[in-house]
Length: 492
Image 1 (tube, helix red, strand yellow):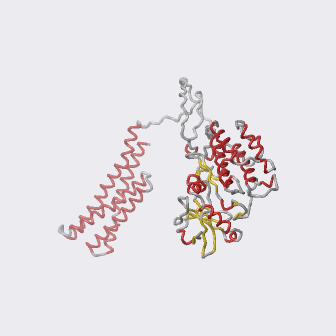
Image 2: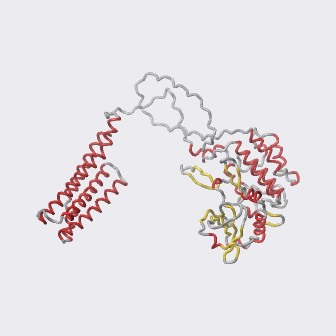
Image 3: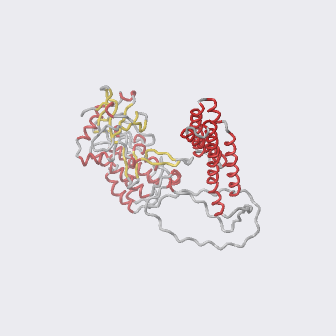
């Protein structure tokens, strides 16, 4: 099979890095059976340890599959599809990019969210943790995900391929539209008799903890599948005790688990033996999603007891509503405060002499309107009147009307900007209003200065006429501030 050059992959975008190397999105790469390709590039110190011959055999294996079988493999596994070289030396390989469905959003303690790959290790935790980070997973989802892992292993074993380092860090999950799994780090899987990478085991998932058998065999995969099913259903990271299964687990699931974990490889059931019992258990499993724990209401400081009031009528409990059928994402749920007891005394703030809400709202809306009108009027007075007086004094009332008119408009824009800045400050409308006023002031002043220079031909005099008459600016500022302060005081 033809090896691709790294330079032909297009502008690479980093997706993630690990101990062996980095993974990039390869926009110009095309591989069989997949819509998008990713490029895994080994670190220089790792390349000497990679059996690129075995890796090439994996790419050839994929090309030999029928369309149906190749598609079935690629939709479940990030299988190596093409070798990639740099200046003729192999540096990595192309594989299917992880679909977006296999990413999740986690809620952090700070309240922010983090996007990351959804590996199965997230689900090996109690429901309280899952609810806290915003993962809504029910018991049926767990059974279906376990069945998907078992079915994928059965497909691989049918081709004589062993996963080897089967652990929840190497298996991703998706719950929408239905529970599915996706295997990564497929370059560590073992074809019959050879492996592209040295075999290793994830801590606490070692087959060597119970047996000295060979690594990366279908039998070692069967042991780790049993361990994965146990920990996934129990919501536990490290248990090896079949008694940790939920009490609702069916008897045939318990039997398969007990037979999967002994040291004798021949006694372990094949992954295909798990698929039907797990799907049957899912059909009757609980579908309720975990609910985030409600936080206790904050303790208010002691307040004086108000005079006794007539007892309020007892609240009527709302009729129960049916639970929604669609999945409720926990990170979209709102934590409600605990209901207040009917007899709890409330400290009432002192009554203030405030206008009715409708009147206050109307007056509040008048603040920017009246202030803007005032700024516009004063801008006109501060711009047009000086420009007209300049025109009359220089040209005797019959000068260049176009230049004079331009100076009037420019002066008005300048003073309108000054009034807008003051309005923004007086009304606490920081941000865009303040910036817009500043820009108006600068642009209008520059334009008026140019017009004055055209009229007088003296740069110094033009500068004085542009920015000297601060009286009008101060007057506009004072009026806008007073109007805003008065109206805000009436509506506070």
